[in-house]
Amino acid sequence: MDFKEKFRSKDAKVGVIGLGYVGLALAGEFAKVGFNVTGIDNNPDKVKTINSGKSPIVDVSDDEVSEFINSGKMKAVTDFSVISELDSVSICVPTPLRKTKDPDMSFIVNATENIKKHLKPGQLIILESTTYPGTTDELVQPILEKSGLIAGKDFYLAFSPERVDPGNKQYTTKNIPKVIGGTTEECTEAAKSLYGQVMDTIVPVSSTKVAETVKLLENTFRSVNIGMANEMALMCQKLNINVWDVIFAASTKPFGFMPFYPGPGLGGHCIPIDPFYLSWKAKMSGFESRFIELASQVNSTMPAFVVEKITDALNSTKKSVNGSQILIIGVAYKNDINDIREAPSLDVINLLQAKGAKIVYSDPYVPAIKINNSTISASDLTENLLAESDCAVIITNHSVFDCNLIVKHSTVLVDTRNALKDFKDEHIVRL
Ligand code: SAJ
Image (cartoon, rainbow, N blue to C red; front, side):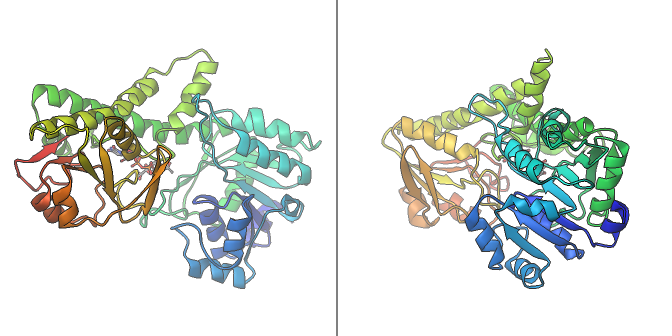
């Protein structure tokens, strides 16, 4: 039976390496359409959680996981030898940056080395992790071919960028168009015939490098435009113009404009990181990507800009940062989620603590944060906490926050997200 028939009939045994917000969501979609899916993860606790019918991620419910497990459609293992029994393996492992802003490929290399040990003729291997153009051809393929099998001849190899937006109820793994680029046309076809059983829309492209670069363009686009919005905020401050009014009015243009907003900085594990995969690779080829570097510089100045606003706001009440209690409202890297990776709130808190501030924070999604070798637990956002704090700062505008309470009971108030756009109160200092 050829791969098309095997995938179409769902007789194929599919595998996913890395059971995080990308891999487990993908494994769930495979199980939903009837595939027998094996998840492989090096974290035994995560494997145990999933096999016990619980989901460690927001986008797949416990009920769904327990249904997949109890029906025998899904199992999770730590042992890579299971790969020899699989027809396809999707690699969904992290691609962080090192401190030097160089790509950390260790997770991809580890997964690929383990696949190589169990690679069989006819298998389909798809890399999904966000990475620099050339990873599939120059890193993954040579490792796999050490098995003696040749990509495009003995096995199929493709790249397909993950586009998961955790917590997004409208756009899911199933309905986000799936870009696929194979080592050969037949590899693209093989990947298409598998993913076409799961995703509503497949977007085949001419090579793995094109597919790798698509995701980096998407996220560099965001980083650069957020950087421009932040620079507009810095510029409008100098010109004494309300940047929020400017962006709101500009966004009424029905074409040729897309609003981005200033904020306290650039958080998350995608946008601050992905563009550096592209600029790193470009630099290897002697090309300096100035937009990526400049956007990063502008975005990185925002926490200090917020601290300057806080300092000036306190000064207006004849107080200094040193010795003041400052209430941080919202610490997650963006609203209505619990993720604090690269969160700008942490940079703001670091800077304020260095100036001698006492920090308290409220965030219903984040019970505690570790910072400067100490742990701060979240406080409830109450009248008293607002009244006793010398300054309150909205860093993340979670929808659950009661803006009336914040405006009414704070003395000095800084809003970095325009969360209080409907309040004209004089004591509100805006970005
Ligand atoms: N931010 C701003 N101003 C903006 C937009 C975002 O300051 O106008 C900040 C956010 O507060 C956050 C950071 O930038 O700190 C990143 O925000 P994001 O909206 O880009 O959210 P992410 O990091 O969750 O990005 C993900 C990405 N998804 C994938 O990589 C698969 C991105 O491609 C999505 O476009 C984005 O979600 C989304 O649209 O929600």
